[in-house]
Length: 515
Image (cartoon, rainbow, N blue to C red; front, side, top):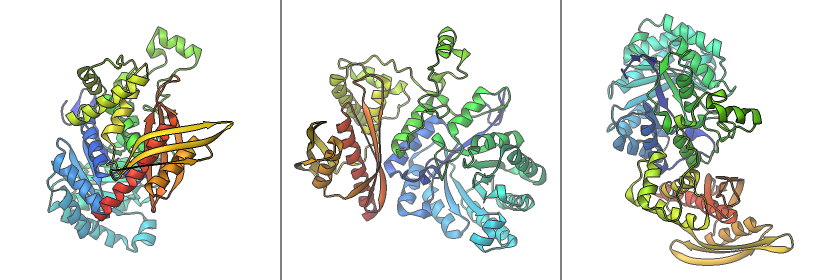
């Protein structure tokens, strides 16, 4: 492919902000290991820009951005900075060892933000925007400026600001629909107005960043592309503040599927879309709704007899996309307890997880064998659950050694649990309302923790009575809200693993804070 244009039209740059705006979803905080693993996956996905975080926000955020910039290559790494010297200097300190690093600075331009938040007039905002871009341009020629709440701003003022910051050194100017207020026709007209009224717009890439408050983020982004924008800021699974952001997978697959109407292309390797979606869902604990476009469990499911008949005769009768195009396997993995390491390694790589170390592969292999001994039919989803649990696990202060639970309609629900706590074996038993309640009470006693269960969800990874159960919990502990996940053919054991995973996340956050 040529850099700017090929037979499929003009290139659209995909700016991924899952690690920054996506992490701002309530309860979606990621640790350094999780962010780095996800950044590696985004490289495989071949997004153009990864917004790694907001370095001034905390020491932890700074360290995460620096770790990614220092070690990730073949993609632009950017960090967010408010329009002030300290933020910009801190962002550069985190980014400076990156591969073509970008500083992304922002300042609001709407009258409502100027009056109530900034307490500044338009001339002051213009002056600060230019000064901030000049400061960033001292460090790198790759500078992006965002006009916060641009879609509710006076367009002539936005044009003035963008013209000035481009002269000051901005190579990308971003027009966000910060509150998700715009509708497609309106948003397209706004972008077209900018293209026609900014004299030096040819010196920069015009970008958009849409929120999904009215469910229009993808539609608004597409309207912007048709009007002249060439970068879209998006997140995997559309996660983000409030109702989320433009869903990367939806935007990319629209452009791929409807190139007849939208003459654009991206460099995204679509076969990595589904593994990326699963990774984000596992790390953040934000499950994807079944009817979610592209990556939802029902996106390629057909229940109607008429639909099933049509699909069997010719897939394209009811499917406009091939599931394989997004990396969705057929679930036909023929592996079992007699399978060797090489076969399992090949299957893992075919599923898109080709960055695992030998140690991680060995850990996955051991768990696979354990599960294959108790589960007759193994499918890709089982293997994927093992990968997520083994590879993305936080350090385990609390480890489950054994669990025995008893329950029934005429039996006192009891749970006996044996754990390793800081390397020391402890055991206890409790009576609860049910087996899971008894298990959680026992774990709390053994770990000496006090947490509040905010959310509990259980789902089946695959079909069949021997399917693995996947449990997700949201816990509040010591003022922190964390996600815990666990998978096991026994649902009580899966719940215990999820609860312990959440407590281990709390311990990890506390250790990071102290460090």
